[in-house]
Image (cartoon, rainbow, N blue to C red; front, side, top):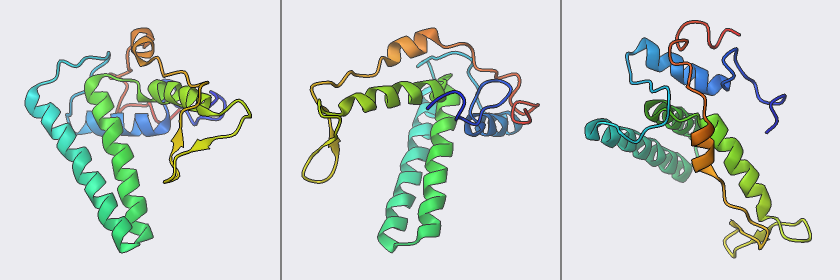
Length: 154
């Protein structure tokens, strides 16, 4: 996704990331400026539990064929995932861009995708894995002090 096509804020975050950061600021939830896996075990377990809960709601909504609940569950999954990223100090926008770059290398030599029998896109010989370690290493501090102030008003 190009920088021009992404709806960004003054702080350079996507509006989704800034909105979830605002929520974390207003509700006194952990906001980490730089990536770390050093999170309290109880908080780490909560982040996992919240994601599992939302994925379960998506599964239920899908089984019920309820498009409103499907949309709600998908939004909640993204919201909770961004919240987890903020908790761990991860610029999820940057990680998503790197994963996208990598995923686009799954195309075959003919420029076409290769599918598994169930429809999943599989890796071609051209596949280059995402360098998430480098993305995290290069990450600038998240603007945690701006969350809840004017980060989403830009």
